[in-house]
Image (cartoon, rainbow, N blue to C red; front, side, top):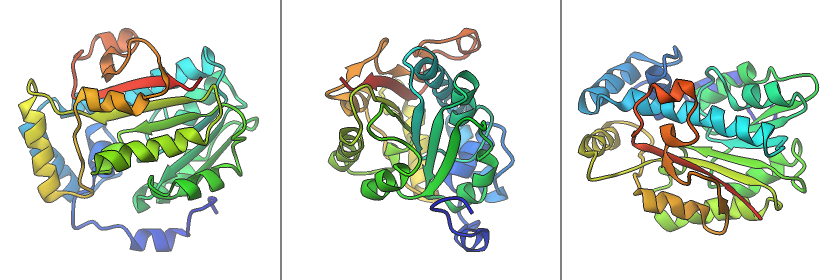
Length: 272
């Protein structure tokens, strides 16, 4: 049994296949198979409103890989707390980190039942390291920290991964407070890796796609401006090039072939 995760029968009973769900649509856009007809239909409608949606789904995933590689190879991070991890796909956090540092420890956190059903697929890390999975909501910071401490040493630096998840906290101040509570509990040398869907006058089709999603899908999401996204890093040393389109964050050869400007912005900050 996965720590903090109920049995599959209870999890499957929580899965609602009558409405499209963001984790399953994201999975569809990135080429996965863990989705339902309702998700594919909604995904196609959103893509009609915003044809570049698949580009920033991929941009977010590739940003994760580059950030984790930097943290494991250059910053010496050996512990990762990945909240809102979504459905398993290629190059998950533990795979990227443990390829560089086999002794790396990773705790995944999500509260989506379909994601949790697939948790065992994620728990295939190296013998030297450890990979665990928790069933918890981002807002329940006390539970997350208490349970994660069973796997991670919270007196040593941790990379807090919040990719495309604070968008589901509608109230701005609450979303900033959640991130602060998590970072406050981590020691100096810890890092925040965060990505967020943006709103911009240059991308009106993104706003239309989000509006469609919020009328038809679950859970609702909130866009924020690049300046609002940057605020999540207040008090941290923001690594270059700052908070930018995910494809502009330290691009590699694969990323250079992708659209530079996508409506998913991300950054990495270090706690001093």
